[in-house]
Image 1: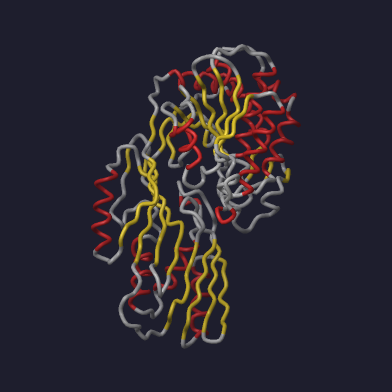
Image 2: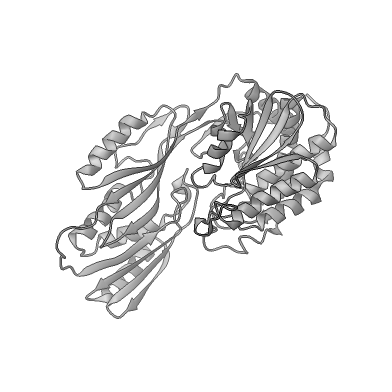
Amino acid sequence: MSELNWREEVEKRKMDLLVDTQNLLKIKSVLDESQATEEAPFGEGVKEALDYMLQLAEKDGFTVKNVDNVAGHIEMGEGEELIGILCHVDVVPEGDGWSSDPFGAEIRNGRIYARGAIDDKGPTMAAYHAMKLVRELGKPLNKRVRMIIGTDEESDWRCVDRYFEVEEMPTMGFAPDADFPIISAEKGIWDYSIIQPADAGPGTNSEVNVLEFSSGRRTNMVPDFATAIVEAANPAEIVAGYQNYLQRYSLKGQAVPQKNQVLLELNGVSAHAMEPKNGVNAGLHLAVFLADLSLDPHAKSYFTFIKDYLFEDSRGTKLGVAYTDEQTGELTINAGTFNYSKQGDSSIGFSMRYPVTYEWEKQKEALEQKLSTYNLRVESNSLSTPHYVNSDSFLIKTLQEVYEAETGEQAELLSIGGGTYARSLKEGVAFGPLFPGSEDIAHQKDEYIDIEDMLKATAIYARAIHELAK
């Protein structure tokens, strides 16, 4: 292993790393297909972030390539074998409740605050500067090193799907988009919707009518806001009952009477779908309140289903799909989007993170059969099967040696419920940037990256690139 002080070399280049990171974070690279063009298939902000990385690398002397404006790569070195570093520059919507501009990239208390700071723009820039450091130090490489940059990781992965249709698959690689030490196993991810067909029967009189109900932007986020408009013979009763509900669960929200209607709003806490317990699901809470009102049968069925089968159960126990294994732990379910309509179909969107040994097809059929008895159907939106790399591989052994040499700590192998680009490689692992014990605030308000941790991660990435490619 190299005796070079990688951390010291990173410290010399600290200001350049911070400035480049802030510039990237200031770009609002949220998926926006409403403004899609051939030059910007996922929206102008996403394309701007991709262009920023490629232009920066070209200016620094790397070989770059844009692939159909949905992905790109930055390359150095020579040789037949290819080491991949898979990153993404798209981010989830910013959500509400920030203490500063979500795209201001403000530095305070030794941290950079911005949407994407830890997922995944900060780590992307750390890995880029690690490549740049290896190159500047003139370290000889016998393999090519390629940073592959995606722009649709937070949605449907269309970027890497297209990329690997036309570009070379790396021999091995890592994604700086999760936790240290090394994540060798990732759960399967099934995104699906439960659909309640439109009410085909005659209108039914009821004391309360739910005219609108919605919550959530993405299935991979715990929704932090929910809203409903209800029509009631006694609006004051709805307002009083709602205030009691908010108080009982220590929630924030409001009930605004408007003639014979009441606008209900509820604030939750956003979190990544891989661990719903880290958030407070606004959609579930508001649905539970609505379920106990005197609703018509169609609405009653929708909201009661949520109350009986989803509320306070992120492990799928009530749905009958709970499962755990030694490799990847518990199955988790996040109810991320809600839409109720009296006129059209109503839906609930889910992100299920299931263990490596879970028999997905068999369990899917059982779930479909169970829900059909409630006049509900299941629609699959996307599926990413589990990913696992053997602990004896050259990739894992090398990264373990690098991590232990740079930190002095044991490099244990981990598994996660999140999905990183590592699973798009035949042999890939997630590698940082969060160190053990660090707060994980990806997809939450006031997302940040700790600057000292970022510098330490950059040193680890530089050393890893050198050891894998030398």
